[in-house]
Image (cartoon, rainbow, N blue to C red):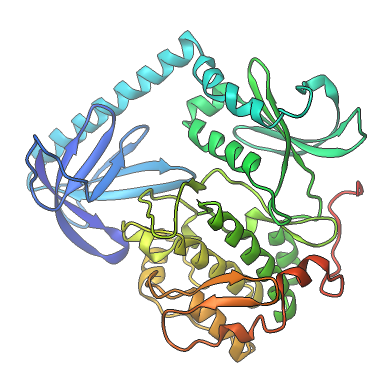
Length: 430
């Protein structure tokens, strides 16, 4: 264990750390030099698996950078040591561990590419079909490719027995293993199966073949909210209030089920054929999180990351309310509250910059956004929908954010047609 100086680039300072590199790829840091016999909980915890290493003499001599993928986000960590020899020693050791892990993974896939995931998903995949005859690929007609990505594709299908339309997500087991997405996939499977809410995408069936995982899901054909906002530039406050209330209802449901969503963004918000909200993509969810519980994993989409995540602090449910603040701001203002193509500058804005509002926003809208985008998670407001009205927990100053949702109830957003807005349905199958 040696002393390294870690640069948290988005707040532009250097912090001394004692780092330990483990053979499983863990790269853990401590503020004080710990006793090897009794290691405390680390202050920093990275993985060097599949990392890229770069040596540089800027901003200081003897600097090196580790770049790796955490979930869907590429992150960089910058380190500085005293001498070129120390830097070579660290980079060679890190590369050796990363190469060893890569060889082990390739050998595991070569010997038996899907056996591990078969065992892990067998019980998971069968739960959702407990009350149905187990489905197979032959139970569906395949109509149209809806989307294609790294891990597989989504196809519009029609169930032969019922004639109903569904979206079938078909994932390649080998790719999921190779990209280290097994945990992500199983989390999404569990959340889909264990949740039932009108504003969350629902799972009808799940099954597997020799080399594929198949999720038969509700077909949501109203399009991404991102598409509609891009076309219209901004939404009215009335329309934003309607969509926001549905998101609040869904988040409150997840939190009551001890689930933190952690990936709220426009691309994960869709509309159904009637114009109601549907939240999709549950791979970054964290289960078993009570009101006071916290998490540590650095994950999410850069533009939507809450300040406490960027600061490597333990964080809780408040990250979802920050995400709601960002998407609500986008809907009413037509842009992100904090943005820069350079992630270093973006993170500094999220941490340090005050929020700015267009002149066109009402005082109630500004108060709502000010409460949701408070940088201190302990002071950030949260929302709790009730049957007759939306109530708010306000722990900072006297924000009248309840005025923004005044008169809107949980039942009204489910039943009212007067609040629905015209839009183009993405596919004619209704």
